[in-house]
Length: 285
Image 1 (cartoon, helix red, strand yellow):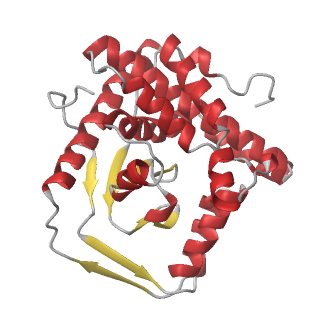
Image 2 (cartoon, rainbow, N blue to C red):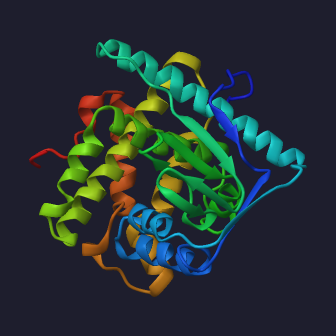
Image 3 (cartoon, rainbow, N blue to C red):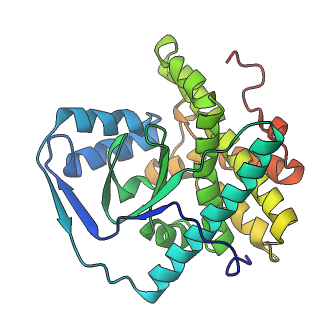
């Protein structure tokens, strides 16, 4: 991926020098295990994160001098460029739709972070919090993506950021609000289906970013799209459940299968059109 000459975003919050710790009540290892279980079994982890915040519990904050490695500095620089690229893409698309794009902040953290959606551990991976309209990522996730999930490559890393920014676009378009208001009226099984549609749409939006970024800035190198598709396949619900417990439970899927994630990223990438990303077609939203 050709990224080094790209613009850097001004919307990066670097919290890597802040170390948080929480007591077991409302946080700590107990909360981490609950969140991991939630991710695998189809529960929206934001619910548990928020419950942890409301329950309280001991917490401490320690600010430490940050001495990141050269590799970490380069990765943080890369994240800033990709975020700036999503800003340019969506600003242009929103303008075409007669709207104004509100840029999200991206928070870099290490280990644990406090968001408006609650406390989160790095183990849950990158996430978007609609309550503060921020994307959160521990750069260590990229090492896991490369080593544990066998999805190396800078474009695979860019896809992850573009996916989370896709959730921000859903928030701005009020899609997220419509889905969340239906929670109380649906069974967990039915709500999981809506969650899958949300995630697949974010994959499609990330494909739209890749389409427009390539047209505007010629960022792609041979093999880049394959990297993104490989990353999408590695984090499908079916693959993750199979790896974690040996079998899959489709009714508990919240992100979609590997094949579905690949399909919807490709739709966005090939068309570059938001209209091609209606994963809710036939659903009353």
